[in-house]
View 1: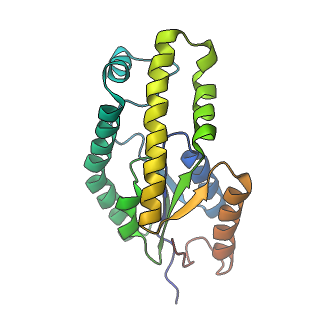
View 2: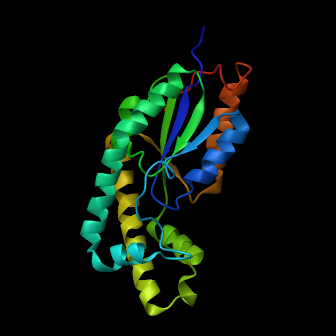
Length: 206
């Protein structure tokens, strides 16, 4: 008898489309959706309304320090995320978990016959334009643009580092800017689920 699907782990930098993909998989496969965004506090996107501490964080720190803090934040989150993943598997609650804290180097050892892992990635120009559009960059003042630029620089570096780590650890990489690639991924998982009659009784590989 085949083992069932335990979970799907979606890694990727900010604004690459993790939440959108997770929602599609949740609806298509009937999974419980979990996001790492609400599990710990860390300066995120500095828009639409920027809190003074967030503005100060991005304006005063160097790009290297900002990215260092981000990686430390993710490292601190991982033990708790790993326990949560294990708890969901033990409870037999099939889930899709998405978030930037799911770094490829962390989740690669967790992938198994019942746990799918993938990394969403997008071209830097596409990702930067997506963030500028959402932030209202063209309408922002000079000071606001400076803060937004720091966030974009941090996110693009994270996008590049995650892509590199995914390659090094053999994690599946999906081009988030290619609608066909994303649709094919969803279709593939749905078809595998349908082949055994339900989304909770299919063997999937990362």
